[in-house]
Length: 495
Image 1 (cartoon, helix red, strand yellow):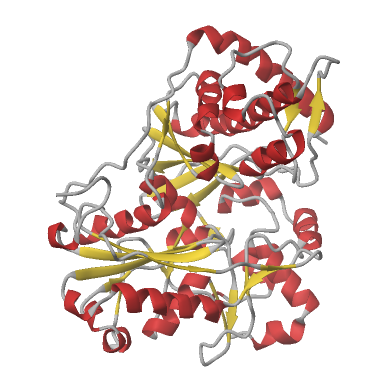
Image 2: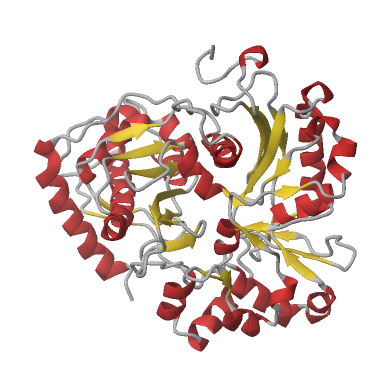
């Protein structure tokens, strides 16, 4: 039997899957049984960090991550488990890039989504292409986190290095190449680069041509149900516990975060609240039209994921804690107060805005401050502004997927201060359910592989907290507050 949301090895149901998650701060791995339960004493974690600098650099050593994955496999893929581990699956932080030579060795660092040195190339692309048309074709607007501006920047600033690259890879592709001797990229990971035609599922030739990249320099694209085999025997020779295992192409963390939180279809939206935040929904089919504030990534021939991202959620909480320094009350007490017309109105763009306006240079603004306003009132205004930002994404998602039955929220900023979910529930007039399992992303990576490895096994439900139900009596207040927020946004942010 399972103990909470986990199981002992002796009680685990086969087949097993080894899931690996490459995040911004660590590489993690864990064995999961066929129900999607983590198996005790199989978790491994290896910390790392991005190398950053004031010019916008954000990189990491790809071979360091390969080493961390080897250590995870050493720990979890024990010889005594031979024949019981049916698959190995991996997710990574999205929109990364590694250049490799003809031998398959990395000759560039891994550029991360946070590397902003291609800001000028974003503007170049916007002046060259019809951005709206590109968004409808690829599902993405031009942004420094995507690869069209990054590849253009590399070609323009270091043409010698650019010319030496034999193939361009996602980090997960590179890891599998080193461990297996063969590789492929998952459809969703390809889509997250901003270079995939979401309708055809093929690389976008027009953008590649602008970047100076040939289609042959990019990886084979595979749907989640098309795993790789250890055709060279390289992995099974090093890890006998993985003999016969299938190796699943890399997927992005945003996709599996939805799946791991229990939002695998349009009946439920998933939201995350870490340093940054996001709201996403998985839909059947490939939507013909995408609202301008969203991104839409092809997941497979049958599904897509739509969403929007917020720069500042946990970061906004940190600002409140460090700047307001509440002494006579706590943030949770502030968030549980009744809504008030005296609450200041806040645009919470401390580090710019992504969805829905994509105003990278937006700044935070606070209005409606009276002499009586103190730290608690400012804190309440900031968190209401964060919820307004989620609501703006929600409105555009609902245009495509319809209104869901509930929102599932996960992430550190939610777990630290879950009381603010009451504000979000009142603002959206929808139930908000906190997902309390740890490592929802890692869990989702395992579940996606198990859809292929053990499709008929019933999955265990992730643990959740008490639902925050919407209070109808607060609906009119927040509807008016949202109108004020939009008016403020149009005056201070929209160009």
